[in-house]
Image 1 (cartoon, rainbow, N blue to C red):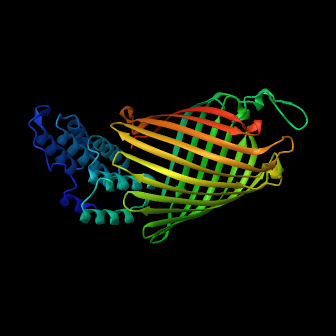
Image 2 (cartoon, helix red, strand yellow):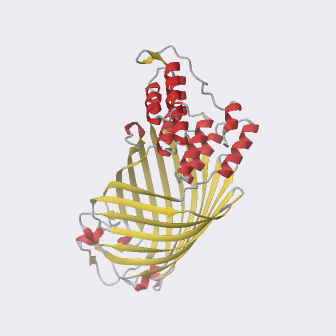
Image 3 (cartoon, rainbow, N blue to C red):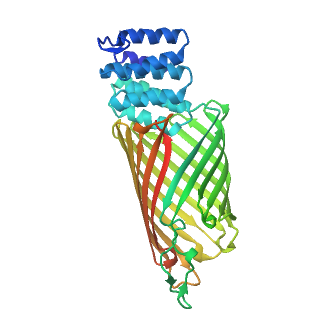
Length: 436
């Protein structure tokens, strides 16, 4: 195993077998319970061993708790019970965030679950601790070899989503036009509502050669409301390649997306995209993306045209518990009617904090849009500033069966020279996510 060397490198501070005099269960000492757990594991009575390790997780000695969680995680990982293993490692890291060995074991388990992004982050967190040079080199080799080998995978997300402006519309009752003031119907103005947000994705991995994999993917996203005319649903099918070349991961793909609004077909897009992930040093990562799409709008063919986007991001693990990301993005839309064509550019920042049993994420973005020409009804072409912020809290102390509640609050403000697009919005998302 790639991680055997860590036990001799001085990175792990866990005791080999704590010799506690505390009586933790039925008059047995911690050492005796460890011995009983080892015997149960040797006899392939994994569930019995899990219960014994769980008893030791409540021991007053933090070294005993850490050793119990580490052994439990390693045992469950060996049995391919990766979700339970990840929870054990995560609980250990809540008390010992500088345990590099455990970070890397968590990375290996996340990769086995198909969570490449989470695995890479765990490696960067381990490297932020400040490892000895000889150890750091071996961790670099581990990072290069780290990739998901899961043949099939997927995820489903469900959240309740109160929203002050589900249609991102203006609050104004009338708009000035080149003809006369235009009175907006109630449905054309900002509408609030409580929606159900559903997201799902599935993928497969077909190995073609060492370092080259074919990736078919399918994803759906839906925001559903009591008033069905505001339902927004999209589905995508993608076929791509994943090429691992030394430190770089390159992913070209082609695909098609269908979107329905209010239960009716809204748009179809054919897409081509390219993604590049490149580590910079041991704590940093660059992510670049470029894409081109051809869009066809069912309700208004004057919007038909091309969609082109590019972005570059920089992520850094500052410490085992904190990190941040910066991003630049650009977007270009062409259309049959220049009034619908526009170009935009944006900047954004993300930060995350892992506290004991609580995870915080914060995000802020600023985007500038310039329309090519004015729409025929309005006196000005579109010129806009969009400010968006969000704050999310994952309450891992309330974990049930590997999932923890998530509360996310967001706000948007779009200032536009065209009143139809001038709006403000506040959102709340209440859902569950993985606790690791």
